[in-house]
Amino acid sequence: MDLTSISSPSFLKSLDNEQLKELSEDIRSFLIENLAVTGGHIGPNLGVVELTIALHKSFNSPEDKFLWDVGHQAYVHKILTGRASQFDTLRQFKGLCGFPKRIESEHDVWEAGHSSTSLSAAMGMAKARDIQNKKNYVVPIIGDGALTGGMALEALNHIGHEKTDITVILNDNEMSIAPNVGALHNVLGRLRTHGTYNKAKDELESLLKKIPAVGGKLAGTAERVKDSLKYLLVSGAFFEELGFTYLGPIDGHDFEALEENLQYAKKMKGPVLLHVITKKGKGYKPAELDKIGTWHGTGPYKMETGDLIKSASKGPSWSALVAETARKLARTDKRIVAITPAMPVGSKLEGFASEFPNRMFDVGIAEQHATTMAAGLAADGMKPMLVIYSTFLQRAYDQVLHDICRQNLNVVIAIDRAGLVGADGETHQGVFDISFLRHMPNMVIMMPKDENEGQHMVKTAFEYSDGPIALRYPRGNGLGVPMDEELKTIPIGSWEVLKEGTQAAILTFGTTIPMAMQAAEILSQSNISVEVINARFIKPLDSKMLQDLQSRNIPIITLEESALQGGFGSAVMEFYNENNLQANVHRIGIPDIFIEHGEVNQLLEEIHITSDEIVKVVNRKVNESSRYISS
Image 1 (cartoon, rainbow, N blue to C red):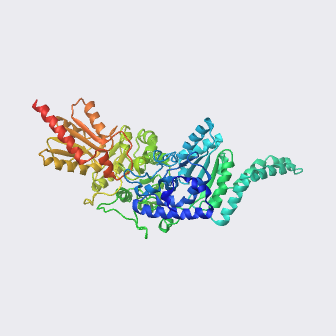
Image 2: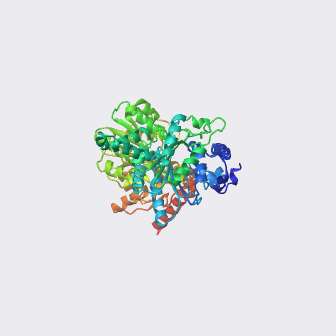
Image 3: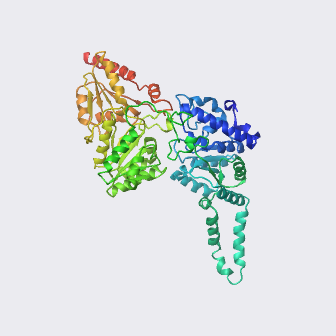
């Protein structure tokens, strides 16, 4: 079938199971071929092909609302809703988003790049439906990993308590399904849906009460007997205790089972949870065999072999550099432990885990728990390193503020993917952490200029004993600079001059240092002398250097790959204001918008964070300064 001809999922209503199977194969081939070029979340999407088709056949989107938890498994949904022709632009600049996007389609009713939000949003939509006397279905699709998130459990509790009409699809791709066990659970699901199971429990209680002599004694324990029966026979007892009708588990690749159970679910009043077993990566052997998450999301790959196409890079992975330096230090300091919320592979902690299995904790999708657990470890004398993506650290704001900073505990927060991350887009850009960490008392924030300074900052972080310290580092690889054999400690709050200059100064850190150096070189060709400073400590600032710059009465340009509001440039201006010093400061950074997906260089150019922009600003500021002095 030509998938690019699909404009609406309504055509599925007339297809039989054999035609649906053919469509599934066409979609798998399409995904494998297209994602080999663009990259993307191939494993999750290959696993939900039949499930997505069955959902669109049984329900009527967009009247019925599909909420894809996290959203990275919505590629099949996008194909069935008319966007197959755009897949060559997937996750590319100005192209198709890798997550549901409300402005892309009326079928995308909820946007998510972080997990465990679908159930709360579904509750909101269901209540809006009820208040407005509408009759549509609300169907959140949530994975077994996302279901462990605290927010998802809070929502389950509320939905069950309110007895709200919601059909939850639990997409469980972490276990296989044995045919005999699956058949038993399917039978139980059908019996329970038809009311036979509950009737059997009522009959059991009635029977116990009728037994002569002992009946009275047994009647008092009838409820416990019924509960025991339920826990013995039904794996979904947990959900039923929360107020859900539980169906399954069923084979998520079996159209007959899917359609039958979805029709059951539609007839039920109150919340229903359909437990579906799928195989991540189904139909593509390299993804099927993946046990550690490599094929969860990839860059381009060779379709025939499954070999990943790696970009040319001189330096080590930033994630690996931080993890392996911590591992090296942990060999001599038994207090060092590592914690991550479900990102041991992305943050390259496999080596640390293999060498120190008792000192490595993957707590699952539970950022708040991970953060407070780190605080607890620190409170009892350990040196915890919380390794967490910048975008996910946002979810633990209160725990960082209240549990770590307020108690001034020695927690190392290793902030992975700090700065723009590219293809994952606005939900994942790590550009807000400086703004929401900088105002927290006791917090130190630093970012290295290269991987050599990065390894020294890891040592600095673990040796720091006056409270929490955050180490930011970007996605991708280092520059390939020579590495010192011996690790050293960097004085907290100290900056360094990378290039001397007399007419203006650029203060920057991390990934934007090469950009600043390039701009300074271009300006030197016009006989404009610019100083470039590695402002590696974002908090505390190097007050001595800032006072020296102010005394020289030269323009100061701050440059950051992070949000301007509350960012590094704001900190510099606050410093001068608080010290009653007049300074000519111009800030360059990310404006007050969400940054969409695309290559990082394209995004930077779009928001005018380039060496050419720096050159323009410096030229203007130097000319303004010259006119002021001459007048």
